[in-house]
Length: 249
Image 1 (cartoon, rainbow, N blue to C red):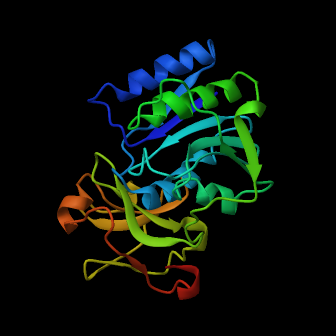
Image 2: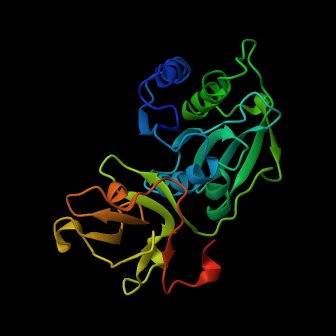
Image 3: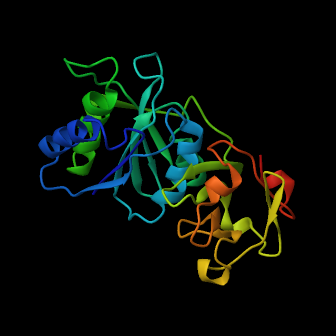
């Protein structure tokens, strides 16, 4: 299984161009579009989203991951194996959370370069062929070299910021629900929000926080747009009152 995680969006040709390479390299392998609306240029938010979202996929899944504002620079291209899953992408921190939080992590630098490599489209020309090879069951031994770890590593602690806002206006945070006490208040934009287990437990239009299906603390409103009501944007800070401060940053 090939899983795509990018900030390419759906309105441009980039996803289709990447898929064309994957279908040529790994014909017959299912391709899953996990997310193409990762926050633009934001590898830090992307790292937390990728870690949370990847957990529902089985061992052996191959993730092609692109949030890469440094494309064409000296930053490395890498393959990471963690918890039995494969991740291919830039060494800019995007893969560092799955590497740090997973078990049995190994890292390889991609040394192979295609004859025609666009300076600004490594997702298509470099990452996709390697991901396709892995998904087809062919480890690219001649194109990689194992290294001790990633060059860019984000702090693996939970991130007390807004990571992503979906089309409903629900705001995902970088706080994992397993560390959250339902008795705690979520403080955001000087508002203290209470916990609800589901949307239906809140009054219509009521703002609240809950643990979403990906295991992250999320700010929402019942049948309303929480991001609009609170004026939220990606990067805004939040605070879960009562959580151990040394678990958050």
